[in-house]
Length: 306
Image 1 (cartoon, rainbow, N blue to C red):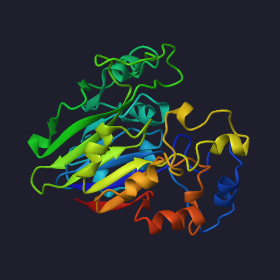
Image 2: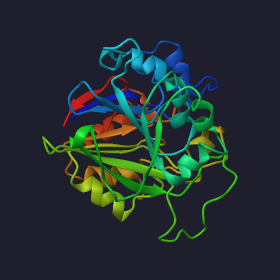
Image 3: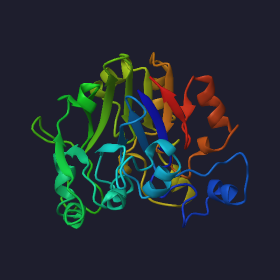
């Protein structure tokens, strides 16, 4: 299984167009220790020929052009992209579908609430329908399905019930077993090599379910949005904290880093990194701390095989 990181930033990219935080200013000034990043997305393939995208970011056109293996062909309007797996209905993970509309026939997998939101609140499905013959396929947590003739097995992971802001309806205050998640991750298994990768860019809390899937994975791509829970409040950028936005912070006794460090995966990578996060700065104390814990900071163009 070949994995390419097309983008490693949280919504807005890095630098963010309307942000003058210290990180964004350093990037714009050309500081070599702070690299620009595009919106979060992965590309995965069993053979380097057929590909599935994990999330479709607003930067999709630039991201695909940057990877020769994702260029069109062999037919005039052919594409190696056969499917898209959506983790949620957030704008930074779905607006790229508009850029994939030209005469395509792609399978788009997502949880039921996400499919509904893209038909109603943010009606991408209706907009795309006259241009493309895509199939919209519901995924259900813990119900695995196959891609590429069975070479990849994909198991959706329930990660939370927080809808995007543009959806007026709120999730149940006390979700039941029958509640369908707004946010999922994906556990991908190469049935030929046995390699396992988990992609979870939006983690509301560290659940037993996530731990179970992560414990036996070879590679983890996990939510690295914020270093501290009150990161945005401290900078005066927002009154929201990490949990309000559906993200588990990295640092702290209840953060993700301490949990990830104990896992046996040979590679542990943070993606979906917000522009305010100090781990974006090479050699920062926060970056050095993660390195000492065996945790990597993802970057655009990162590649690996599992």
